[in-house]
Length: 456
Image (cartoon, rainbow, N blue to C red):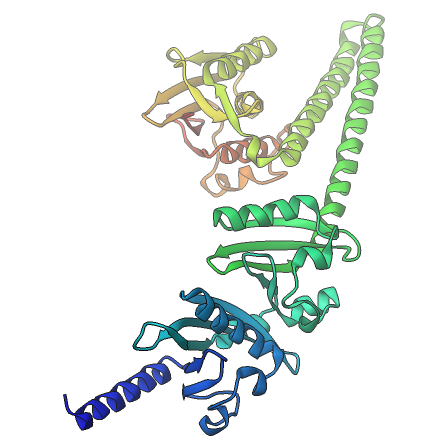
């Protein structure tokens, strides 16, 4: 190849390299073994090519920029290897993030005569982190802070220039709780993201919701203060505990008073003639009804205060048949029939399942206008669910009331019920992942159908 052709080829190569660097928004340069520039493409930071040639980065830029760049070039020359790293510089309270790569250059005798270097400004990728309402910081794999946005600067009263480049543990020492430190390290080691809520003690003194993500460059931490929300939750929990205690005390005292009412009513009944005993029977009936009301109130409170994650498994046969026997014993005039053996299956529920069947059976007797109420229980077992139907021969439920009867406090005309039994049933069944429906019975009455999922 002639000298002119070789020169033309070198010009093309140089122009192509400049085009690649410009397209990728990168800066490229060659330096000699003294780290002085011998060639540069796409100069940056307001410095021209003419000003750069023959000078080192330290003579052109601030220490925050020149230090990491020269260190990478020097390492590439001394180790004769590829060197790559990221660093952050701060200028006028603005953080700029760069990635730099350097490799040695050899002469014709294979001796190192300098280094080639390419750098790219990553600041644009971090700019959105300045605009987010979350507090954000990032650290490298050595736990040195590489980014610190305005929100976390406001929250911690530490400006980026005071912490970027420093080890996060050295700055905060014992201010970060031990369990949070362990979680940071676990995410860094495994690469698995994590999310947590954490109270940060003084000098912080607030609650935060924290999300952590790891990559090859280190760890990114996003957080937002949730102190107000946590205080509200704690207030609700305290009110709930107080209400629960009050509920227990009231139920206990009411039951004790009702037992005394029933006891004295029995004593009075012994001294009355048959005609007057009817009044005492009314007193006793109302007392029993009030006791039942406290029982339903207890069950409602247990549902309201229960943890939704506590649903387990229950035996359908035991829960249903025990309530059938109880309703028969309490109502000797009623005819309660189970049309076929109850299958021995386990359903998704909890220990409140018997209350579902008790309320449905009581409802079928209480709202019945026949001298001898007739209730039929049928069970339909399917692959993944069980349907329990409770049918009665009562007056039935008008179509415009079928949806309303499951509401809190809803009860039929002239009903002696509490008005919350069916609401309790629906709340429990839906909490188990099931459903409840009501339809007309033939020739008269109503049918309540409870669908319960089988336990896995």
